[in-house]
Image (cartoon, rainbow, N blue to C red; front, side):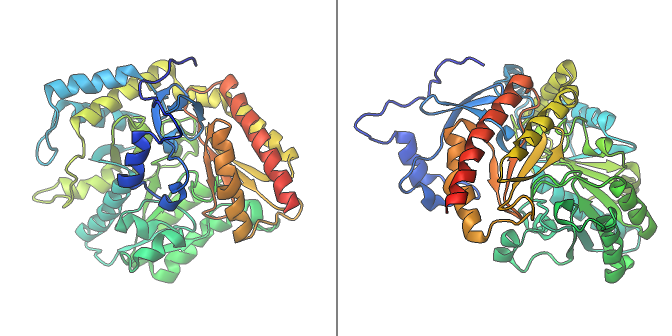
Length: 466
């Protein structure tokens, strides 16, 4: 997609850093970032976006192969979303949803309920994904409490899973490096095996990971377990897809023991897997869905907890209430952004575009298996990962030092220099994750593959020479 040079391009002379660089290094504290990495290097400053592409302060174009952290689903530069936000701000810039309502929050809640599976008809808005998970965990505890089962406070999640960084959500997150610096956490978080079958023994029962949930419930005592929280496709570790029948077995287990099932779809909703919700992709009915990111295509912060009539019922009676709230939950400007975003989804059938091109995308990534460094390719829709290995035959992974050099010493920089933004990650085994905007078609998917092939070929050569 053609573009004029962004107005923010800086004019540098004699090697002087731009004023933006100076301010960024002095004042901006970036999230999950080794700040010292920029002592002698430029901070990547993105100033402009159009379609599947973003541009840095020098005017260089990059393919946004991560949808700016799994969320700009409708693509960059959608003026109609910005216009909808501006019009809403003129009428009502903000009013709280604490005992009050406003038209856009009402309309959006009804629209979400109409798209959500089954009887998920109540929508509790938040500012983002971690807050949505936090609210859902509190809701599950409160639900059981109001039903006379106050002892149900434990949650079950999966190993290496990421569910957020607030203290409650962190108890569900199964990544030790994220948890350890902040312990003790909220009590009750327990973890079971995930669905990454790449390293499983060949004779393992495909529903082994689902059965592990029942074993954990029985070990902890069903009367103490509040909820099970799982992603349709697990993000951290690299796009772990469920085995056939996995979700149906999990639903059966939750029903058997009176445990609520949360489908954490902060990433997997809003077309990422080719459906509005991941639960629809894998044909299961959760009690609660948590969502954010693609709801507004990240043009404005917003998250939501979508709740079944069964779970909402105790809170709709007499003097009962859900004792929880977020100041900006249901923000009218964010709700306007979401409504305009969903208009685009419907008009352009973005979930349908994903389904149309999913096999092609997967085929291009599978074609990279001819490179010695590529071990596994997995995922669904426009949400895939490539696991990198030292030996394809044995599936041997890289040790910590090798992984550090490969991901941070080479791949991250090389991919960026070659014009592709994606994620090189080792929260588990080393992977490259890809989640392009849902508007991407054949030409853009081939561009991703071409850059990956160039960079991974060089990575394979350099690792062999080490």
